[in-house]
Image (cartoon, rainbow over all chains, first blue to last red):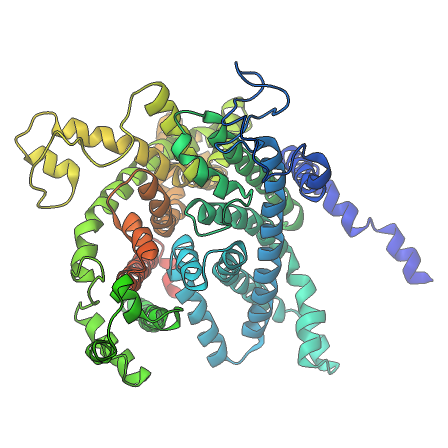
Length: 296
Length: 335
């Protein structure tokens, strides 16, 4: 009973977090845009006016509605085979969201486990693991992802696997350094003295206290994942046509850039706005979660 | 200092061997037999297949193959391209100047704009200029550069007709390129207008490749300057009545440069990754485009060798940044 009363006096962790987060107006703005992006991704089936792959052959390369020749039937115009740009962009949000979620979950889960292991492991294992991460980091991320996709075969799933592998070392390093910093603190020693076993020490005692930087990294790698997947799609090594993935759409639009600006402009704008919103949000998360980096 | 250098070099070796191991195993885990891929659509007889298997040493134990490969690498032998039949090593260094020239221009562009922008933003912290600048930096940082390239082509080449769309120099000019650096070779050639044409072709790729480093440098310079500007010695300098230019430009900037130099060093990887996209879009004949083309042609020795050389280059640059950092800041050496 007593503990409950005490807990109520202290503002909740979430409230504290929100207090600092909402001080950064850009971050709140980013959060709204990101929310919109998620809603579009989830509800694309209902919001989009057309099926993203149906071709309206009598409306090839029709400009957006405000230009001569455009009509409100296709508000953002149509592409080279007469597919509705607006519907394709709305559906594209779904693929980008999917890429972001899967890549972040896979790379964070793998990276956290390896990082925890590395932090708790004997020195020789720690050294080996960190050298392996150094080796992965020596390759420019996009190049390594490109080669991995070439090995696995071009598809969105393989692109996600490749990007997750490339992003993982960042989580490993981050987790390891937080673990090393936490392990020297008294509460960890206390847990050891009371006889906590290694898995408990790793996942229940130490991990929750290392999460702040990892969450910030998760936000940032969400945007990196979207950018890299789009770049791979653009190079023809990501999602394959006719998938309405933003990068793939840009690749298909390349030959029409001087004739139809809208087929190039809108998919890229969608990528930019989404990535920007996530980066804004990431800045806010960092301010709110990491007191050391908080802007003074 | 010597100990610091040696300890850094010691970490280089295992990474180097790891990188060779990865690029070695690359060709062996690929789906499809490299010999059949090399033969192409014509196919080949069973005897010829066995002959080639022997010639490339694919019939021997993996360990032996790896040591052969490693000793080849250490002697600068990275195999031959399936397509051009030229040594990978020669191809890489023939194309590398183009990438280096573009990357250097992009870095200079990023520094020339990013450093002053970061300094001015820090000095005018919270004012309109700072806000506009940092918002633009965030946009630049989030930019999908392949789209940015297409937009610039539409605007600058399509609508305004100001810049060429692809290549390194106009087809009107033809001269030897002993160094591979187009600006230098054009300068040395007797043809008038060649230099102008080379510079003209560099504009768009430089802007595209330099955008992300520019944003990163501006942000980093600003935050480093803000940290330094609150130090006591800046207050002392102000109290002495020094001119603002002297305080900001000399006292503060010199100390703010340390983290900025690190960022510059670490953006070599970013530049190389960006070069893949930029060179593909602008048909720039450098190693980025070469790698992408080879991946599509399934020219495995090139992909393997290029991957290795690029990784080794990144490792060496990172190592030099570490060493340089130790030189500038003795505190790091002690750790």
